[in-house]
Length: 483
Image (cartoon, rainbow, N blue to C red; front, side, top):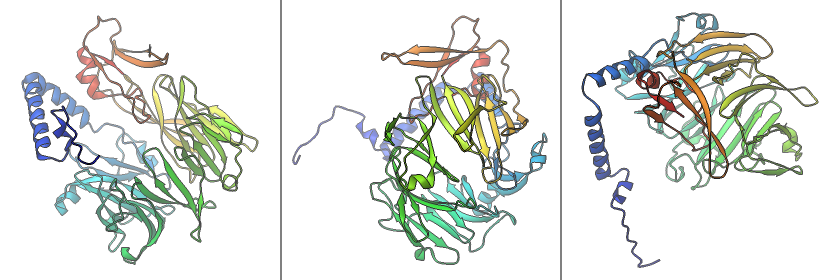
């Protein structure tokens, strides 16, 4: 309203200026007070040394990802290499206690050579072929990254390859000579969130300024994106807009440039694998004469869905105790991860022509939290499975759906868990919801200092996990830990 002055009694409203000098100075002063109060003395120095041993340990499991021919890729940091190295090895080598790693990029050496504070931002590897990658490097760990093309065979950056200056970019391979690129193309090309509003197809050897626009969003979107699925026989291109953090709009992009809507609800998660479309609605969805609840997982044939058919098969339906935590495709099967009272359960679903056959995944510990680290949907039904608990260090297993399960790595214990136990209880909220929580510690000892932690945002659960820092710094000193 014109002429209206709003008064506030909030004496700290000036702290809302996150980039302001006064707010930054206030934060530095409060941090200094905290450091002065909690640090110093022999006890603190001894504890810090113990926790550094945990954080810098080189006997941690080097969790890998597959990139063609089952090569095991890993990004690794330790005390000697704080910025990290990107490396790979074979399965035969990975099985050994100390594998021989083929180092592709030493980020500490690169930072020293170029005089930059490089932080690893990830790699997008070309499929198929796996001979090139688009590497993202940030200065100091920010959202803005520099993108450079990297030759995986020669272990060098590609001269005159695909490169982008520092920006909040999103890139992906189409083929060896084309990529999708969403970046800062100049005035008007970003959303109000500071992310790309325009995505283009960029051909090798041509200026970025000549790249062809394939999709545009609105200024008030979060961002736009484009992707290419190179699966033989199912090659597809998709474009979309992220309307906010929970809603999106997506289209199949044809070779002629036509955009065919993938008409799932805006707030639904979705996934296309070969002939299948998976949909996970975030709110109740009435489709095909049936209303499916929020949190369900539905399957249908992708081409039939585009043609207007709406017959959905229910692969998962939530209840008061059970929620879907994720899924992973192998070449021929779907691995489903659910949480029952925040305890993990994994199943394998196989389409057999008349429906989906369901069976439990073997080799999954009963009381630890387990999750699929990676699969290789291009080639076979292999999977990597990681399991850990509050008192149980991590174990990494290699399995083949319907076949043997092999233990590849076991992490050593970081603290003495003798006499400690994990118990689960439930607190009943005002609306009757039973909220599960874990209590970790000496069940026979009198109540003592308790560290209580919880989280409830963004649909992210806190699951059982092994922490050498909490173990050494708290549990081993008589504390109780509640999640």
